[in-house]
Structure formats: structure tokens, C-alpha cells
Image (cartoon, rainbow, N blue to C red; front, side, top):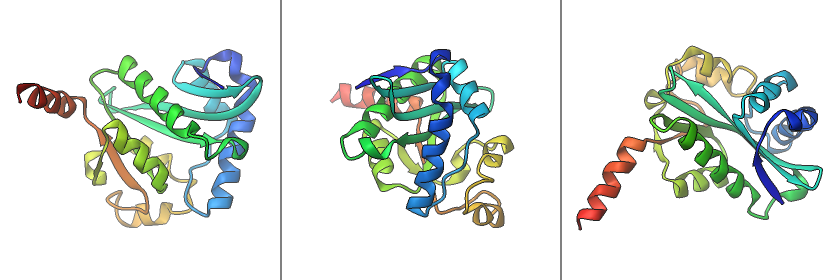
Length: 185
């Protein structure tokens, strides 16, 4: 299994990525925002995604979205093809996209929203903390991306304060402070 920073050579996987996301949303019955192949192509083109491949077979994917003039970075669209689930691949993909986010945007707060317990656990292990939505980006374009989720009405009714998703945030400033406190002991 190879997990790499995606690029233009991975364009051929855009449709299967979108299909896998859509199929997963149907099976889980939870909110997952739909993405178009054109949207995925942009992520591949600008090196803001990671892809997992088993030879030439698509296995998994996750991308970076930048918000608030690079103050916030979202790790979104984490998906593992059903043939590769329950093997620890999601954790490896999430770790790779997290490292890519910190490398490309070292000062940015990294966040995600999810309804999935497995993703919450992975995020927690990476140093994310659960937060209220008010601690996430206030960029309207981010919240617009939730429109295709079946739970968007909840988000709208609460003026982006609550949804069924849990917001999780990694703050590099807070992480540095914690490391320094541990070093003093």
C-alpha cells in the first residue's frame, strides 16, 4: 500500500473518489458532503491531498482546504474504499494529510468536522481537541460546502453553531505550549 501526496498523475481517480464518498454517505446514513470530480481535481492539482493506492487500485483519500487567509486548514473528505476498511488505512491517510497540513501551513489551526467515532479517535490521537463550532473558521465558503449534507438544515437553523458533526481542532500554538510545559517537568 502506498500513501502519497496526490498530484496531476492521479486525475484518473477523481470519479472513483467521488463515487466512494457518495456510496459511503448512503450506506452510513449520516451526513457527508458530496464533492464533484472538478473539486477533487483542484485538490490533486495543487498538492493539497493524499491518496492511498494498492498498485493502480484506489484505496483511500483525504484533502486539505484552506480558510481565513491560511489561519485555518481543514482536513476533509477522508474516505477509504470498502475493500480496504478495518485495516488501519484511515489512520495512516489522516496522519499523512495532517503532516502535509503542518508542513504547508505551519501556523494554521487544523480542524475537521465529523460524525464518525473512528475519525474522532484518530483526530484525538493526532492532538485535536473537541470544540464548539464558534472556534472553527467563520468563512461562509466553508459552511457553504456543507450544503449537500443531509443535515444542512440543522446547521442552518442553528446559525452554524451546532450540527450532528463534532468539530475538532488542532492548534499549533497550544500544542507548542503543552510541549514546553512537559519539557520543564
